[in-house]
Length: 242
Image (cartoon, rainbow, N blue to C red):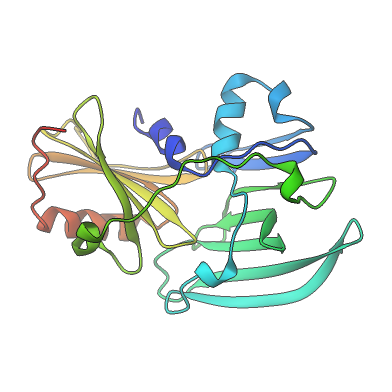
């Protein structure tokens, strides 16, 4: 999908210097696995993708308990340091599960699974526990605006709405754990419905009321369709402008 790579522009960024592993479902049946020591020395395209998939920090308090069952597993030792391990499961079966290894809120490892238990992607530090000296923090922040509140969907807040250069509208949703993007193009450009896995994300595209809606993220297909209907019923002004 031509919109998929746009998703990577809006995920957290960081730089790391220790050994990193990354496994990702490239489609419905294949995985790619990588391990490298310094992100600066890898292929530029891989640098672009990896640096935007990673979460640098995660506060377990950001997981909304009305939407996630949180199971804390016994702490483990990782290279001599204590690491907290949490499993997050969807209460309503409407978003993906995650397993997080955290050291003082720094993400040591992260695994994301769909509702069938299929690994979508996983990454982590293979050599040492990260600390603040391993990273350069981005100054970029995404702040949810109060006037987006009417578009809040089942605990997912709108982080921003942008019009892209091709005229499509991009809405980014985040519930503190999972994220998804909705792209809306008018007039409709799709000839048939699309459901597939691409680079660790579900991708669902369908036409409604002469508009093409494409959802990319870590929620199931049926929920993507529900989101599209929810937004379509809002009758947003998406025909033009900036």
